[in-house]
Image (cartoon, rainbow over all chains, first blue to last red; front, side, top):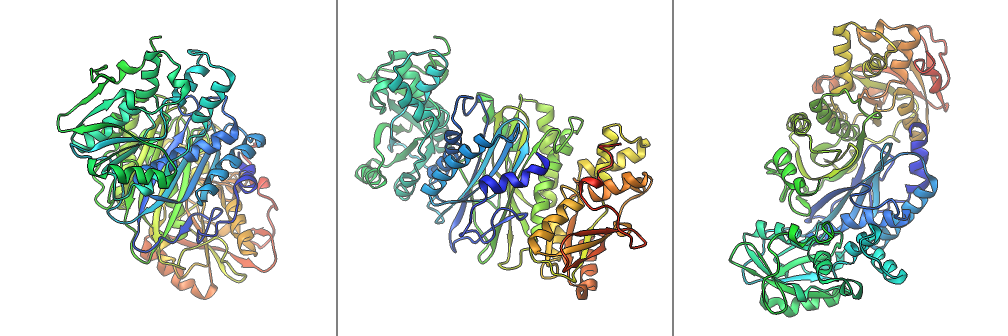
Length: 320
Length: 320
């Protein structure tokens, strides 16, 4: 990219950074922390084929690149402040850059955060974002705080992103409208930042769903030293997932990935406060199970009968 | 990378993070800022062919990936605190990872900083690092503070990294010993963190040399609204660059790139304080020119006669 690099950054990404003491364009960005707050940091790179398909529109990719990082802050109950962008591109592609920047900034503006630094490099497409947020000491939501007896909750609805992926792969056939719906879930996930903030002091543990419910729940269970019973019939999903075969529906719900909803635990006595936090954040929250002293995950159907034991066993598309 | 990802992170990168409130493995890392300090942030991705050659040993790559980011903090006069790593790898390559982690941590330990978060993804090799440092409000070194009459300084010696690149390209032939020397400069640059700290309150502007002296000086001149006269004969270099043809030597010194030395300005009256700062940091510092009220860059030879006018004109290898 060499000589064009600086022009490129300026053209698409240079904007005023009123909150940063010094924004992009110097060697470092400078930020003034709010006194008494802790910094929460998360970093995620997005790579074609793993995090997005080549068919993704550039503005959706800009949105999703920031969204998946904000989702990590949401899972910690941190308030987003700023982010950096490291963009590796095969070539200077102006329509791509214009669309990418538009999607990125639309979401950044919605969360009132600033791009404070970044670089662009020539190479295979790779989008690296580091987000920074603030949280009062001791109030961050972690993976390891869940206790036996806690209820297990999830935000929004699950499975649409996985269904979209399978539609792209040709494993399922959807109507045009259904495809548009689930594609939107996959390409434009909404990070649950407001819910994460509302759950401070209520949730005992939280994680965002990026790798699938069973896999991500496993991280919480291991970190917290508890087991869980998950009620398959209670996992919230939309009409398109409901219309799948039972096996495919299980895959979408249990091994979905890319939902970017929050999975969290809270004491049973806080049930009403969790509902209230969801209402304040404007996000549906659903109780889908309980945490147990007995290690391991038990998935049960509507009659309480066990479903399947392992994560791999939930993935029915691969063997379809 | 899917199922192996978490094991991989744990095996090579999981270490205690005593200073972080919460380290890698949760959704976010949590850091407690030092009261009253500003945060300095910088992010850089390294890509094969642009930032390193395929011949680089893994430990040197681990070193360099962190070094180029620390160099940005050095150029701001910020004290490094922590960093995140986003590693995209074509496949799980254990010897590579072991070497990479060794080189990375050796440099991290030398600067007493912690890896507080990261992710690994399958895809074309891409190494994204974001570094965080601290600086007292108002004391960060910037690009835009240089004034006419200031002296222009550079740390260390220039050109070895470029000479190594040309040796790899077959444009120059070096003895084995000479090749080892300049290759070390290219693959294991030493970020001038101690010098950056020592220059707080002395330097009026600073930048690290990643794209070549003329190019990076241009950023300082534009940001500061000044011009400069650069004395070619005074630019510090080693015996191997000295042994080049005159044209090649000019290229190495003026359009070198990858030196990761600090280029900085300071008032002429602070000459002795700059020398003292270099001595305290254990880094040679050399005055190589002056900043002028007249815009533009003038490069002069030992007799004060003008050399060549533009950056491209200094790159003699491309047309060799």
